[in-house]
Image 1 (spheres, helix red, strand yellow):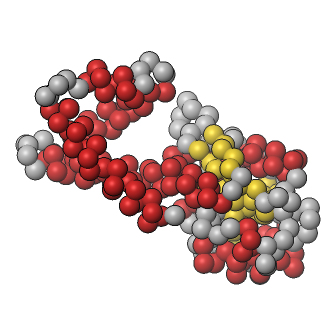
Image 2 (tube, rainbow, N blue to C red):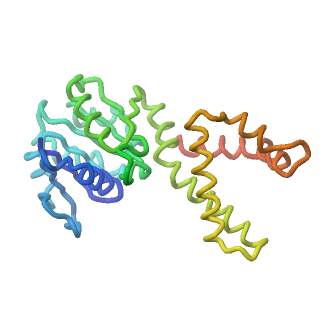
Length: 257
């Protein structure tokens, strides 16, 4: 199989590195098209010509910014046929807009930085897949197999769910990183402990809590009951969060959808 990646920004690089780390290129060839040749890339065909990639590849993953997607499709359309599978990574464009330009088999994939390969774990993070109606079962299986090599695959069947899942999986690592950064910064103002040390404490606590939830040892309600006591500081914090956080989250979601 010849797999092409058009655009080598954060997402294109993430997909490429994950595939290389899972040794996808042992039995398949990877082609990359980018305005500038990426550094440190070996055993991979590099080009600055998108149409060349479209000619050579069976599967073409377009990893460009949302405003550029339709232009790239217009550019490579003459080199596409029903046997080629297009995948794009832009959650903000629905198939009804894409089909005005290209009505062949096309899928959307939204990987997460959380899917970066980690030692001793085959799969990390979630890749969301959204297929156009004319993507056949065999093509769906091939695409799902590619992304399941390094992540858990979640299929959605409508554009609204795609956007909500994108917020949940793809945006969330940035939100979590910023929230923990805010919390560490504020905590350090009241202590001689520095931000880095608070970060370490928070990361370990978050990871340990996730492990408990994933193991089904305790659920959300049971964790709260075990940690919080009446009139204790945890309960005071929970009361405050219950009053303030839902509106913040609701406003955030409405900003993003």
